[in-house]
Image (tube, rainbow over all chains, first blue to last red; front, top):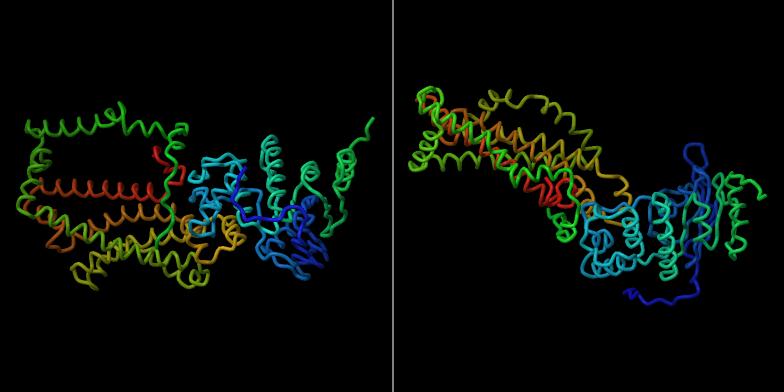
Length: 241
Length: 284
């Protein structure tokens, strides 16, 4: 696929995409994030698992600068790209304007068209969001995130609302895109299999802290890893007969 | 203010779209149902004409349609009808512009600022509680019976629907889209231009449509004040001389203007809300 993008050196990651030091966040008396440290390198794909209410969405929102920190430091881009669970497309703007939102002029148009073709929506620049399926709309949201060439890409359960087959296609697409653009990625998800499929490293969050960290290794270890992760998340599988 | 609302969709895609449930309304605009929809009005007019000609309805009570048309023609030739119509339209336009402008400005101010809302919304709602026609005697005392009084009355009637719908539209913009704007790093100006105003537009146009309707009502009342020009004057003058045909003519003209205003509102919706499923091309 030929895509007009800034030339880049592919291969080795270049330094940290984001580093979090002693981040703390509380609402009222309840501590949601408790002195959390985290580092994600450029080109690294990190998945963040955790039960509802463990603080993983709060962490993502803090990294996106949508939420304030009570203590601690975030070293990283002020404007990471975010893909939310919903596509959040402007219904009154055609796709190219949605992708290039905030990027004025013909250059924005050109980059938007390139980004749309990169996510498999060639020639749909002038179409309206209402004519898209759920998966297609989420692709446009991905194009909108990647057209800005972010150092850090935050994914907040972006595939949760999609059907199983569309989700598999999106997994393949996001892998390919991340390999090409090499941002640091933080994926917040509930889906253990999704985390294993996509991530280089999986973090499990509990009570506002990173409780466990797993490197995703070779194919053979994955079933064991899956079992371990599910146990961490409170799902006990019956032992194999 | 220019807003990027008008964008051309792909015609091929529009054509390929399956027919919506609204297509039965579309059929009313064309094809055999279109003809059927006109049967009752046409029969009514023909019956009216026949009854008048047969002398069953006195011309003083209800003149025949043909005599109303003839009256219109005579008045045009005397140079009265068109100039009176022009005066009435000018009053309505001035009232819409002034009242609509004030209503929209207040709506934007209060839609964006909670302080402005705290300060201004209560007095505005208090004034709104007054039926604007109740102000008629007051208006006459303030402005006499000249043009200012008429334009004031129309402005007052128009202001509130535009104000309320503008505030509502701005407040109802999806907070998730506003959050997206922040994540992307839109400036406040871009946030307003790209997200808030387009998002509020369906509601604002709803207000415009309603305002057009009440503008007419206000105009009819205002024009019955001592006037020397305008459609209302034509009607008052005709009443003095028991010219029923002229009275019926003015009623028909008011009705036609109302239809025209509705058409104008539709036109605005179709051009500004082309993205909206309800106003997409081919469905109404």
